[in-house]
Amino acid sequence: MIRILAIDDEPLALQLLEIYIKKIPGLQLLAACASPREAQPWLEQADALLVDINMPDINGMDFVRSLEHPPLVIFTTAYSEYAVEGFRVNAVDYLLKPFSFNEFLDSVKKLEDRLSMKRALDESKGNFLSFNTANHGIRIETQRIRYIEGMGEYLKIHLDGEDAPAIVFYRMKNILDELPQDRFLRIHRSYIIALDRVREARRNEVTLDDKTRLPVGESYRESYWKMISSD
Image (cartoon, rainbow, N blue to C red; front, side, top):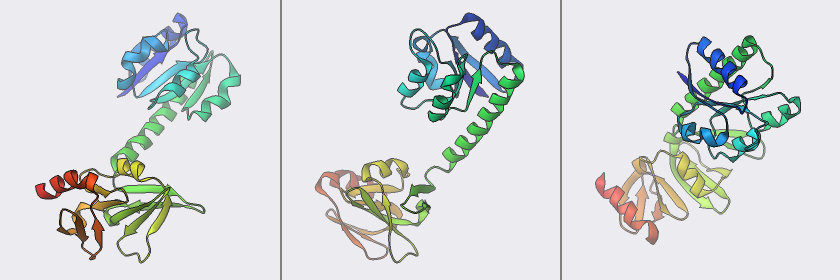
């Protein structure tokens, strides 16, 4: 079931969206709201937004940009000049009013495809990391990571079966959010380790299965020792 939140200051436009949504199996209308302000309580539950652009309270485009983690968006508007700007905010589609049921159905199919891709990526999150380098993109299986070394704006990712680490433009604090929290631990401002690679643990130092020895930073010592002791 795809949960839809419709936002439009025109009552007739909202009524039409309600009629269209009821015709399509697998769609659920969470709420039909006359303004972004009215829609706020429903945002966390929504899989997708149907948003008018020209509204008196706040421009629909600005509203979507203001969301830290917006749902997928289909813009609805009577003004074609917003089309390019709509796709710049990664909108699924752009419906120009007045639109037919078939046009709406085509947009819903695009929405279903995008949601399927998003769910597949969410399911695989933690198994792979993807990075862009100067010449190409690389994909790293997290199971192969022994440890990660920070070097300012760059990271060295030390992997099984590789003599040299992969070097990527990324920050330590950001990559930690991408890693499975039960498998990786930051032990130093410059090091993140894979817990299943630890062979010997001391309060000030850890030795990995390839005999690499890494220091444990003072500010990370308590959380590190708690994690190691619980295993």
